[in-house]
Length: 501
Picture 1: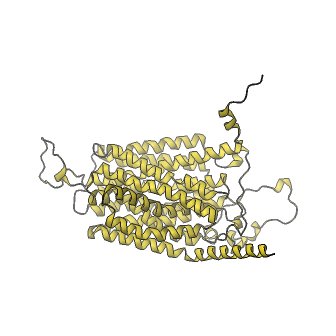
Picture 2: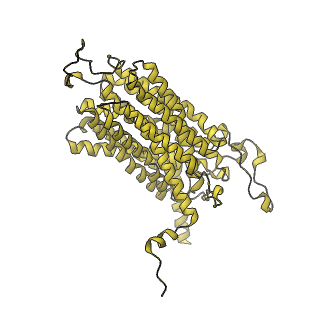
Picture 3: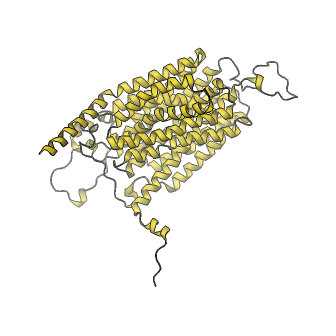
């Protein structure tokens, strides 16, 4: 009698070879970008340790200090201008990141992604750990820490265009919002893990809060080098289908010709029969101006500038805000801030599901941004009234703030980078992703800088700045929202017409 196949083996064999490779690529890129964000988070946790209220700290019995107020602080952050110095640290990373991102997309199209991503993670691990070594080398020069932040900002730009391009190579547009909404939780997972790891060491030896994440991202760089498969063709798998009908994607209807995007009519499709020898040609990298001509790139890029301004202000300043307003210890404030990222995971998935169902990427972002503005106001005024209120408001604000940010940097970037006018040219994906995220990174640099300048005048003013940025992000999508709504109305009218016939 022939034995039946084991249930576990039946489950394994039910997936095709392509499905296993696709899932493996999604899993690896998730881990890679988790490690990127994991290594960015420690600076926000350590801030409240570098400058704290020393009157609440137990002084060692054999320690003599002439200054009773700042004896426990880490110079040069022991002065009254410490918030400006923290802003300088944030901006040294974020400005370098914003500048490097526009360059990174160009390199990402022209270099093997596996080598590019591996080297970026190894270098990022080195500069992250270098910042932490300042604790053990007893370095008190602001320029040492600024240098480490600038170099880390530059090398971290290798990550986002590379992982989005890799995922875009493996997945078509079907359910892309849901898939990338789940996949994009790596940002929040990395923030949470970075907070927890940094919190373990922050009160005893804050240098390890950087060294351990640096080791982790360096190790993931080695994993990338040995295991990443960049695109289906590398393992003889079929590439995904990138094109949808105009009715399914009202936003992505072409408003310019192939020649306008590529800058040359020589790239137009060839008419007539296609021979086996001509079925595949290596696509050429798209130009910077050609990428800007893709419908929606400019609007979503500018929207992301303000959306990322809000998100990164929370990323870098939320633990310090909680410590100052709710009077939490550094570790407790860092742990509490992870709830914002938990909400971000749920918000990113919700945005992906809704945008897949409706086909309205811009409308989904706009609605979440509209609701986020009053929620930020409420969090600032009632968010500390009890533990339950704090948890609920942090998760709600995290979902509404990070939902649009997640959707634009993943599904929208992949949609635009595989726009129908590009005819499946995946080499455009890296440049489009870099333009969108690079523009957003300008906002990411401005947000923490403005928070550092405004926070001495009161946290209320910081939140007014964040609410204004949310409203501007929403307004920048108004043309695309109108286009999507008009497309839905036209589609409903056609359906009614068919029913009448």
